[in-house]
Amino acid sequence: FSAPNSAPCSLLFVVVVLVHFPAKFTVIGPPEPVTAILGQEAVLPCHLSPRMSAANMVVRWFRSEFESFVHLYRDGRDQYDEQMPEYQRRTELLKAGLTDGNVPLRILNIRRSDEGEYHCFVQDDTFYEETILELRVAGLGSAPLISVEGHQNGGIRVVCRSAGWYPEPEVQWKDLNGRHLPSLCERKSHGDNKLFETETVIIVTEYSNQNLSCCLRNTILNQEKESAVHIGGQLPSKSHTEHTTTRNKTKYRKTRTEIIVWRNCDYDSFKYFGDNSGFFKKYSN
Image: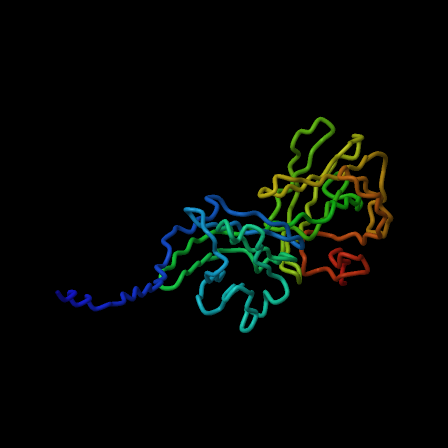
């Protein structure tokens, strides 16, 4: 009796190949514009849906041109080479929620030129999505300075000046009861910093004692600055230099400044003189 031949031994090799399939997601930003104040910082929200880690993805923030980036995160770190010059040392990708799909961008020292559309672009391998959001910039100007500048048209000429506003502010004279008073003329222009400067004039009848206020309002921030002055007695009718004190209601200290009387609302007839804001002017003749 002979034993049957043993069956040949065979080895089975199992090769496991790990293939990375790009995740599919949607990039979501805020439905309304983000509002930022000049000189301060802004955070532009952006996140992935469904929630997933973006730590190993590419996150690119840009304006109108893809290659010109505001901020770039790639290979697990921020990439600053070839960043737009106007955003250098002013941007940061907030990474606290990166593993949850949050990729917000912080912009420091907001400028007027920062206003507009931003693209939040996220890429995982060959799959990518993006969303567009809007940054709206606003600036509160200086507290209004009110000056009494002599007689005109049978009354007393009162001028209100302010600078540093964006966008163009609403300007309004009010009486003691808060009623709107019509102005004689109003001028708004851009200063060297591209922010709005305003001057508005009202004529108050000489025989009346009046408590007036000049109010400027930023329509985006829904904030205003207001100054008040009491008008009483007779003033010299000829042009002269006088000192005027204004009281404002926005917790600013009282300000005393020298004002040179101007004869009309023509900006071309004035030159700058030593106020810190560089806004007030004197007659050039």
